[in-house]
Image (cartoon, rainbow, N blue to C red; front, side):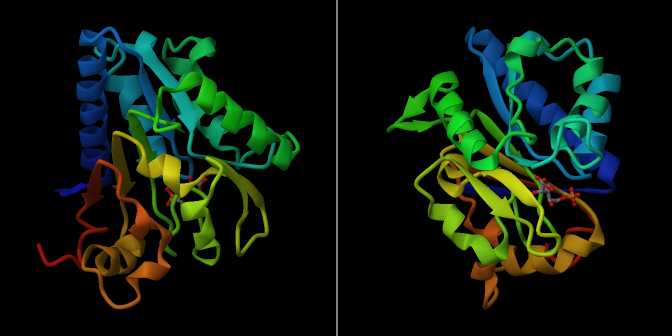
Length: 242
Ligand code: 6PG
């Protein structure tokens, strides 16, 4: 497992660097006449990335080979203000030429347990299987202030070694039900990129990167796919000894 850390002046520069990385990976797939299978996270941080992709990568990105999946979803309809799909649709999907057959939405409005089964089956059918595990080319992750990633929260570390690729989670503060990819499929990805900005993440990030005592309580510390890249702005990285 290779871990790299990339630090940028601002959230915009950080998001732009991730967009450039996505373009580079997509072009590599295009040259091989292969699709580019990507799992997207939600929350706020990806909005800037999506806006930059729309504004500055409209013509360069081979959109027709992108196949989009979700890392997690809140158990709400896609029109709900907290829907990760809804956020992605507004900031990206409605503005770029990705065909709907290449958009694999987690249906947050469905019965959670039924959706877990449906989406796990979908992943098996839609992604290449490596040792029986569906393999993403890229998983884009964020990290919460509490060190959660995807919707794997510190009180649910069992989801990191979970048998199913998809599970129901519950937000520890709000009690909101979530659908989430679990640790094994994330760690089976060819590449994982953490896009983390803002000073509120800096303390937990330092503990994880430095493997400080107790770092294992943070779910983000268990993400160790083939290649893990941290894309950070200076604010998020301001406690790192770099
Ligand atoms: C979600 C995300 C989640 C997110 C972190 C960071 O559904 O909320 O998938 O894992 O990446 O909570 O969220 P922010 O980007 O809003 O800080």
